[in-house]
Image 1 (tube, rainbow, N blue to C red):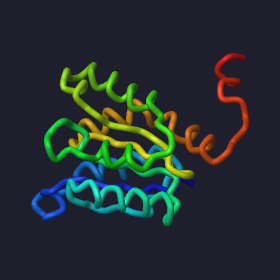
Image 2 (image 1 turned 135 degrees about the vertical axis):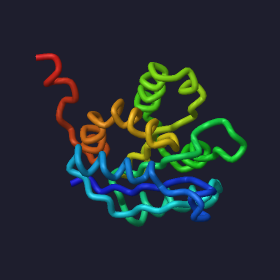
Image 3 (image 1 turned 90 degrees about the vertical axis):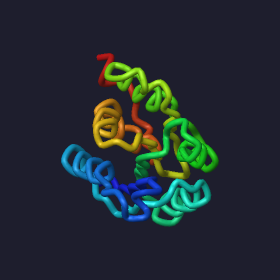
Image 4 (image 1 turned 60 degrees about the vertical axis):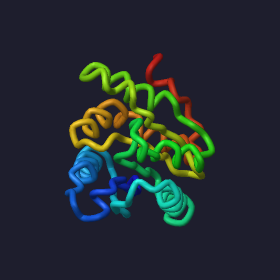
Length: 167
């Protein structure tokens, strides 16, 4: 069972002015498509220090396998989620972020301005997703099949990665 934490990053959501549709989309997809259990879910404002503190708490204290953020991945002045993520991860997983952008470009040219980051802190995989429910779904379509394998590797699985693909 993959333990999951979801952080919705939204000033309006944190003030109670907007429903967290993206967070709910993430929960629905993960629970339905993976052996996953959501152990933490909250909405916080677009404040780098708050995001950093929650990511560290989810990875270091709650020891969640997968931490997904939604929101704050663009180029607007308050979009600081990737910056917060980069400041606390130990390794980047650029292929996952690149795949999300590549798949997004098939739908909209705006996908190229996403600054979403995927990385590892301790034993947690951290994934930044956009803020809209539609973009969340499209990005999950791109990376969901690789998440269980990535988490197995992060936790120390030493089996061959490509053996089943090249038989």
